[in-house]
Amino acid sequence: MADSRSDDGNRRWWALVVIALAQLMVVLDMTIVNIALPSAQTALHMSDGNRQWVITAYTLAFGGLLLLGGRVADLVGRRTTFMIGLLGFAAASALGGAATGQGMLFGARALQGVFAALLAPSALSLLATTFTDPKDRSRAFGVFGAIVGAGAAIGLLAGGVLTEYLDWRWCLYVNVPVALVAFTGAWFLLAGGSVRQGEDARLDVPGAVLGSGGMLAIVYGFSEAESRGWRDGLVLSLLVGGVVLLALFGFWQARAKVPLLPMSVVRDRQRVGAFLTTLFVTIGMFGIFLFLTYYLQRVLGYSPLKTGVAYLPLTVGMVTGSTQVAARLLHRVPPRALMAPGLVLAAGGMALIAGVGVEPAYATHILPGTLMMGLGMGTAMMTSVSIATGSVAPRDSGAASATFNTAQQVGGSIGTALLNTIAASVTSRYVTAHAGPGVNARQLEASSAVHGFNVATWWAVGSMLFAALIAATVVNARRAPMPQQRADEPVPAEPVDTLG
Image (cartoon, rainbow, N blue to C red; front, side):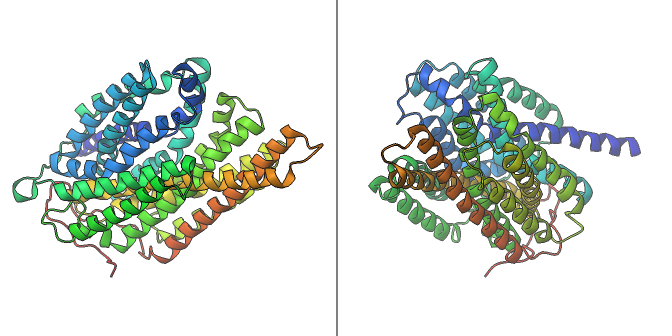
């Protein structure tokens, strides 16, 4: 009997490796292409106006279809959708790597987003239903939280290595062997789980149309705001239309017999706090990635590889915060005692980075700043993941996981568009104010870019501090919630603490 329990335990930890590998692939694919984009643009003759679609096509499909993907996982079975997502993601990556034109690459990136929307909620819900013991769950979510937080930075490092030593196409091809390894592991290691049957085995089609349409409009609107401006008619129409569709989605969900997003998922106070915290953390985090990459390459002259290596301290901090701080303390102290201080520490790191100038400041500002960011965000994000999926009925874990991923996706889109717009406008005003006879043009260009970066980073600090405030006031549980049932029990649990 002891050997059997030991074998089951080992199997669960190997299952974690499979789930973590798949999640890492999804998260890093949001940034791995960024460093390769200049090379891809030259090879496929993309215009400056069209190149953004390499990024937008992925984020649009991913963010817009997450809620639908999470519910499909609940209905069809998480292992099934996890494996379908892996194969589809591998095929789409191969198609993108072999692209002969920009249209083919844009289409492949959109397909990646579709299968990522199926894969990401399945991975998180599989994790939530596989690890139910508090101690094991803390360790598992520590690993997962580190991946969620550090995946984007790892993507920048991997993109730099692959672009510099192989070819930009390998930023896409690399997903194929990773996905196939994860698929093989899932085949042998992951439990199938229960599949919903009877009256509950129905997809909420009106909810899917309203929810996915609203999210597509919001994500697309923010992505276009970066290039068109916030007052553009299309941007305003998309954002307003998205809000209206999501309002109709909420109205419908409260009345649907089998809703796409069960109200129990969003009525729980702790879970809402985790979703909102994640939203504002990613607003600040993705803006920082964008500006810091530009600063290191354009101002300090770093190569793609050196830029990726410069992000390693952030990754180290993320892993340490998730696995050594949050995982050890999650069930010993209130979650907000981890989240709020962690986010304040991350905001302090951002504030340090906001003080950089034209002169090299890696050792004095960026190195300590990224370490503080990593440690703080790793601690907070791991705790948020656990709260977002804890105490939810196993039958609804896909929906809860999808909502968490949606908060990340929307936060990333808002952060990239909003902070980039702020930086661009500040930079433009700086150039206008300081241009004149005898001014060194190159020096002015660098100074104006750094000034715009600094101001936008202070806005990112504000977003991080607001996330800390939410964590301190909304998340009021005495300890992190646990799943209230085993994965094979279909009856939903009542939320511990509800809003309203």
